[in-house]
Image (spheres, rainbow, N blue to C red):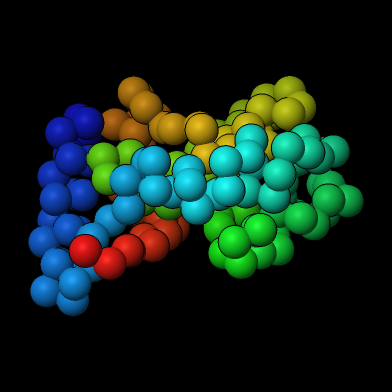
Length: 135
C-alpha cells in the first residue's frame, strides 16, 4: 500500500459523507476537539500502558473538557483528512515500547506516517473510527 491509497480512501469517505452534509475532520479540527492539551484528558502522562488492566488511570475513557469521548484504545485509530490519529494500531503496546510511548500515540499531536500506514492500511480500517463533521 502507498500513502496515495490513504488519500484515495479519504476522498472516497468524503464523497460518501457529502450527500449527508458531512465530511472528515481535518487534523487541526481533531486537535481542537481535544482541547489544545497534550492528551484529550489534559497534560497528565498516566502510569502503565493504555490497555486492559495495565494502568490505574481511567481518564482516557471519560469525556474530555468539551464533552467528547475520543478514541482511548491504542489499537484503534481515528480517520481525519489524509491521516490516522489517536492510536497506532497497537504498535507501541505489542512492540513493548518503553513507557510512555503507548500513551503518546493517544496524543492529538501524534500522527501515523510512513511504513506503518502503508503496510497496515487494511488492518487499521478494521477498527478505525470515523467522526464526521458538518460541511
